[in-house]
Length: 143
Image (tube, rainbow, N blue to C red; front, side, top):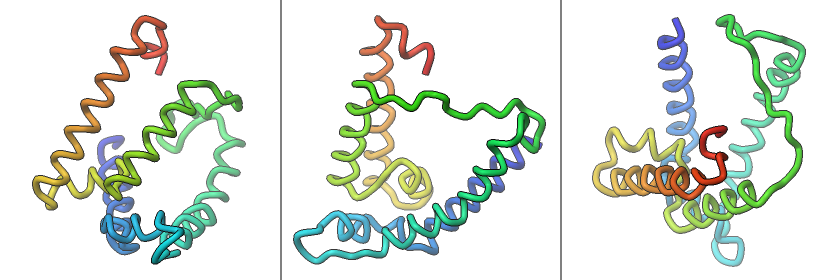
């Protein structure tokens, strides 16, 4: 059942990205180009996603278990640390250079060819490098 739920919701996520046009790196780069030919479409996609998800987060905060029976674990930390700030900065630079973030990139791996595969390899390399760099502090084992 978990595998079916993952496939169903992953497919729904991918379909939403496809319909919204967020698989097109040029649209994302257009949103980030605030000093040039700015495209606000991504702001509307994000706003719609936040509006659709908010009621479910409100409901989830009142529950102890997921719909599939697993314990519901929500983040408890509300503080910023260097790992969060550095990770956000690296994510932002990668997003700004490529016009892709990991969600759309995973969808594109199936049919976009070499550019998406290079992006996927870079994400994997970054994950491995991050684990190696953080392994001395024990943070990689917790995350």
